Image 1 (cartoon, protein in one colour):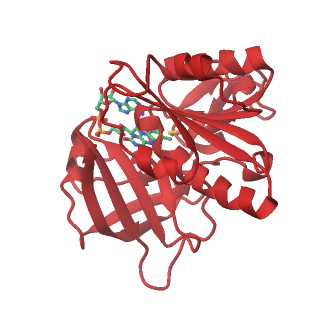
Image 2 (cartoon, rainbow, N blue to C red):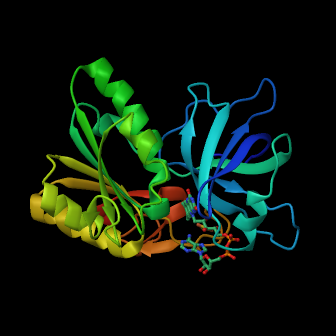
Length: 268
Ligand SMILES: Cc1cc2nc3c(=O)[nH]c(=O)nc-3n(C[C@H](O)[C@H](O)[C@H](O)COP(=O)(O)OP(=O)(O)OC[C@H]3O[C@@H](n4cnc5c(N)ncnc54)[C@H](O)[C@@H]3O)c2cc1C
Ligand code: FES
């Protein structure tokens, strides 16, 4: 994890669905982040000085050299609304790379079920692409992505299709299975022996219960509220099943020890 801020240049920033934007940023000449792990995130700093805290946004995609980052974000409030107005060629202060990300070595060669709910899907796209490449090299493995949306505004679904088999669920039934991601998994019974998930808390509770029922490991990314993003303020602690060795409490910091956790280890 790096607490360094990098002055990156926006090379693309466009709407890909109602209220959802895709922004691509590049490092300064001669700089790079090195190896990026799917599931890691950055803190995007607002230009408006009245909004002091960086906004945590997951890395949706990246290049092999770690020079390019793609972020996909929903306009949720003033910070993200400001980002939506940033033009190509302008500069952005980026804190990080932050967080642990997914451990590919625990997933390669397996039947991996990716479960993304709404704006939880973006970090799973980078994971799907990385797994496809690693599975091809290993000559084994299969990735299925179950993507949940409110309506048929299926942002990123086509990109997922290039890296994985895709199952769609929509709340209003306008595309795919009518219902949530868990309903779609029960209806279509995809094969899997490990789960990686990111999305709203009720969905993650459903994922944890599904993993327990099927006796498989689930790695979940918690995208709850954060403040400093670098382990200092304790604004992001979540309850854990086991006591932390140093503090002797059942707490962990999502920003430094996560955001990706073994579902068995966190109390949701
Ligand atoms: C590790 C991590 C990764 C994330 N990755 C992404 C991503 O890839 N794409 C994306 O669009 N968003 C992501 N988020 C959520 C994103 O950080 C918030 O939506 C953003 O900080 C809101 O900033 P704002 O100034 O626009 O809104 P604010 O004015 O701060 O808040 C506006 C509204 O959004 C709600 N809100 C704020 N933060 C969150 C949150 N973390 N979860 C749910 N509701 C929130 C507030 O309660 C409020 O109702 C991530 C969060 C975390 C912790
Ligand atoms: S957000 Fe400050 S410690 Fe995690």
